[in-house]
Each structure stands twice: as structure tokens, then as C-alpha cells.
Length: 237
Image 1 (cartoon, one colour):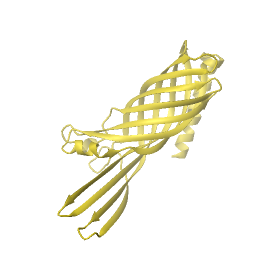
Image 2 (cartoon, one colour):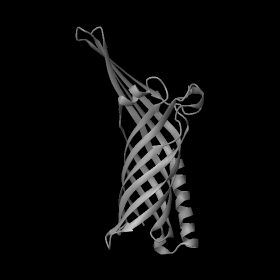
Image 3 (cartoon, one colour):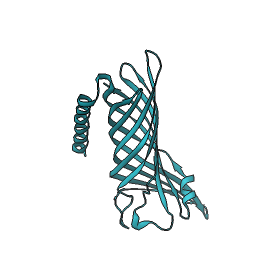
Image 4 (cartoon, helix red, strand yellow):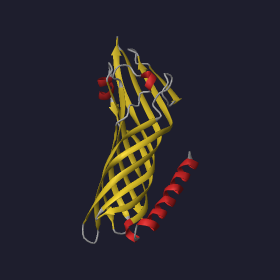
């Protein structure tokens, strides 16, 4: 996986330099990196119990790392392609009591994905200090690794508690024995600020549009989609 990330970064860097040399002048083309924190969930719909899943869903804390290029196509208007490593997932927590016995369960899903976003960026200069950046655009993602961690606690009327923990690797694909689809498609919406020194601060919302339920596992209108809030700091030059 590390080799894939390094290769992708090198390709983007080379392409950006070539683009800058052939079609851009100086400040109209930049390369940058950014990294930060993700707060992600998976939203469910179209099957019995989906509302209960959503009511008990908590945000999963992950991270993001992106290499990107900025290419000027107009006055304060840029196209920004990139390659990104995204840690997504979700957490579901719930409990029930039957005949005095309480069962509490927690399921944490972590997914590692390589994404290729292409954003349109509008810059609003704020004098000599920098500029606000408003961005939007599509992304395609490829799920490459993941795990689920399950914690179950059972407390009897006598006060005895039994706890079990289990970790399983996720399978990606379209078959019945797969856990999630291998690809994801959606849209990004971002707001940030870039200092003239090159440092950036930004927030991004990733709206998953494709169904994460494997094709052979779908029943009726069953659907699962990513929802990701991302916060990052970076530098472009």
C-alpha cells in the first residue's frame, strides 16, 4: 500500500510539473500536501432496522493525507486534482435488556481507501494576507483494507458481567460473502483559507453517492453510503 501511495504521489507531482511548464505561468500552478482528521459515518436505508442502525451510529475518528495540484484556468478559479489516503468507517453502539439481563454491543468499522478527487476551486482574496477557498467536485475511491472490532458485554441480574472482543478483516467486492463494495463514488464540498505564505487550513464534507452494500447482498432498496467530515492543514508551493 505504501508503494501505491508513493507511486501515485510521484505521478501527480510529475504531471503537475509538466502541466505548469507547458500551459501555466509561475503562480498559476502549484503542488501541495495536506493532512488531518476525519469524522465519518455510514448511513443506512431501504431495509428493516436501518433507522435503528442510524439512531445508534457514532462518528468514527480517522485521518486523511492528500497530495494535490492547483492549476489556474481563470481569474481566481482553479482545478485541483489529487490523490488521497482516507481512513473512514463508522461506529454503532446499542444496548437492550431482557429478563433483567443487559446486553451492550459496540461495533467499530475502519476502512482505508485511496481516493482521486477533482475539485473546482474559487478563491476570494483578502488583501495581502491570503484568500478564502470554496471548492466542490467529484471523487472516486477504492477500498483497499479494513477491519471490524466488536465488543459485547452481558450483565446478568446478579451483577456478573461477561465481555467478549472480536476483530475481523473486511472483504471488499460484489459477492455475497463480501462486507463492502470495493469502490466508492461521491462529491466533495470544501471551505478553506490559504495564507500567502502557502499554509492552508480547510474543512471538507464528503457525500458518498454509491452503494457500499455488495451487489449480490442487496435486498430491495438496501443502501449504505459514506458521510465524512474532514479537517486538514497543509502547504502548497
